[in-house]
Image (cartoon, rainbow, N blue to C red):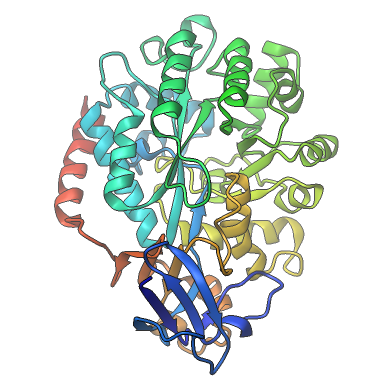
Length: 454
């Protein structure tokens, strides 16, 4: 059993209300099993001498950050001027024809770029919501599985879908939607082929019809039934904008949460992207059901969608995690920056006293883990997975700072120095291990230009 002692860190985040002292001497990891063996108190030594020691005295350690909502393919359309100042529905209808050109190479490159950026910003587990399967594009979730395995990152990859195109009153172009039988058959195939269960699972599959304005009621209900049959999770966009609320009222005669319940999704199996426009009664219903919400502050601000009621949702019983959302509405996949954004935008709604830096870290770790149904992730405890992010608070921006974990957010750390997933280093010296980043950027950028030019 090879062991590694991360010795004497500057600080360790054990939870918003938890003292750091139990781990101030460091963390001992079983690098074969990929789990945390021991927490060492300040000035202490491991109970059994470690095989290897890493001097963490210049680092703060947090649980690996967990991203609960993304669209990897959108890294190809970052900061595109035609949609730089658009709200959601205009943004979508302008971008759909561009996204409809993606193919297998675009899928691989975009996935690699997104995952690499997430890793270098402290993320050890990510979700992705891929719902775009253009006719003839040879786009498949299998590609994302391959990339996740190559990079050594945990992933909850969702088989997204769109079944209602422009011809039937939806927003997507008709050649980007699929028939329900194809969607459900591929969903089952992916779960049966790739979904891992139990502690330490690296690849999991969830079912993710895109949104009320791009998927039929029947497909939403059938997806919920299939997810229950296969025992996997459910994901969709909900209550992101007032336009969406109006669409649901007009098309279904229901508000968003009523619609959710009508198709069998008001359950602790589901996690919802955005969840901004809920009233008090809806928050209570979501909390009672244990339905989780992925708060995506950068995207919500970029598209002027609104501010999620994260504190009230959490206090009602809904797990609240964080997501960077797609890189065409956030324009980055920087997860630690998202923690800072969540801290600030939630303080605007609830005040500084209610939204501490510790609470923001918890949203990105244990809250996100709960949203994805992962009890083995998101905390630094003996027996949990050894998924860790190590940040260096250095340079002029940190000069004069005092509390380290607070400074990481308030002074604005931008990337991790080291990242461990399942006991193995996946980022060292700020770089993804084994990845030719320069070559990746060059080809990805070339393909991005050709995509928007048509």
